[in-house]
Amino acid sequence: MADKPELDAETRSALIRKGKECFKRGELELAERVFLTASYADGLKRLADYYFRKLKNVKKAVELYRAAGGKEEEAIYELIAMGIKRLLADDEASGGK
Image (tube, rainbow, N blue to C red; front, side, top):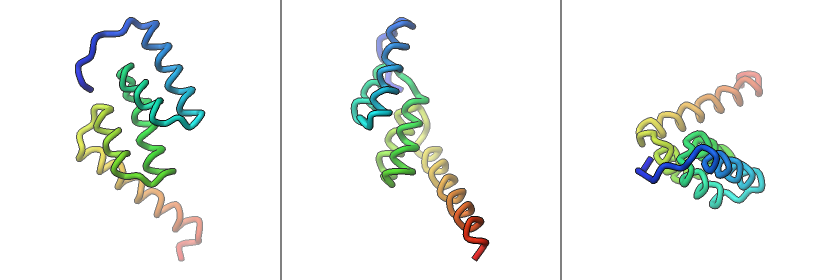
């Protein structure tokens, strides 16, 4: 993540809570800004997963994985792995047909 002024632990924790609340309410853009401000990589990864799995927005998912500190290649590999897992699960659910 980009270099930012250090937040004290209390402020960072409050921001993370706020970001999680925004995410739960579906305020994804606000959650993203809050997670970026707090340098909260796990929250950014959860957002990326949501954009990929629920919204099918691969471009945004890769952007968020990169913002979380991952390299673009790692993000793409992660997305490919999730896609393969989904295909395998769908295949198992349909009895392998």
